[in-house]
Image 1 (cartoon, rainbow, N blue to C red):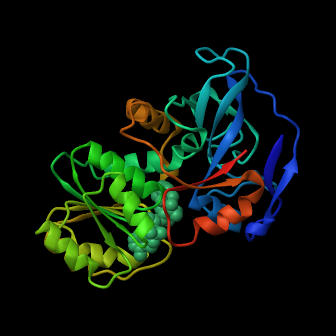
Image 2: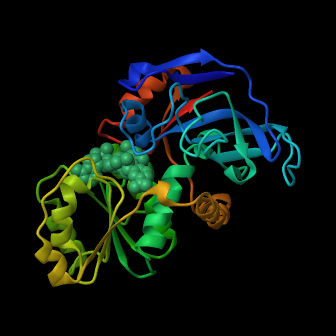
Length: 323
Ligand SMILES: NC(=O)c1ccc[n+]([C@@H]2O[C@H](COP(=O)([O-])OP(=O)(O)OC[C@H]3O[C@@H](n4cnc5c(N)ncnc54)[C@H](OP(=O)(O)O)[C@@H]3O)[C@@H](O)[C@H]2O)c1
């Protein structure tokens, strides 16, 4: 099989295409011929070294992919060769092993890919959609009729959160920094989209919402958290999904609004909890209420470029590697 291998931690150039032996599924495992693998920001943090999950070198990055089952280990029931699936991690590790033309997964790590979704879309589901679901429904406990502000709505997690919140009957306000990202967030269900690089955009939010949003899903807390505390409604909830540094806040703002600031971290979810989220999303993925947006497809061999691209501004959906 062909795989992207990192033999050292470091810059994107450590990612090299190599030929590795085809893996064989053990009992309770399936082998998937991969058509597309998803690139997440954490893949770059792990590659750079010092991430919370640090694989032994050499390793193959990626937890997200989609393809077709091509071999079954002993005792696997309910699946057959030829089934279209997307994965949540590999038998090697739930956080890596997927940038490959073949992966072996435990049965609980495969999920049916509805016919209406492409393999690229399948590769865009696991980390972004489970994270958005966790943030919107399990952490913020969003309810119909509330207003949600998705601070960073043009990327993979943000667009997933927009789709979910809209389908659940919330008023959805998002942000993006480019016309393409803005248009996409609108197309995916945001009622309003503001530009997080424009001065005064949070004043616009206050005008739109009156008392402020009930919920904020925050993609860049190190820049925005103190401002979020200024605009959140009384008794509001802020869920931190992304942060790339430190920030100074005024705790009095939390106190006076009796606001709640919470975080979410995908790796805190057990594999059972991840499977339960995928089961909960299955009907919406099949009927189109949830439908991943692919911004860019690159060949597997260009994983290094994909790692550079995913860290640049101007997101519009997901970056996937095609095999
Ligand atoms: N906690 C977890 O378990 C978890 C799981 C998945 C991801 N994450 C983190 O969540 C973040 C988003 O992940 P992703 O996969 O959606 O990445 P992505 O596709 O690269 O999207 C990044 C998003 O952040 C937005 N952004 C950039 N500058 C911003 C600002 N000043 N204020 C608000 N938003 C801003 C981008 O908008 P523009 O490009 O339009 O400027 C884009 O919408 C990343 O930091 C990632 O590491 C955390």
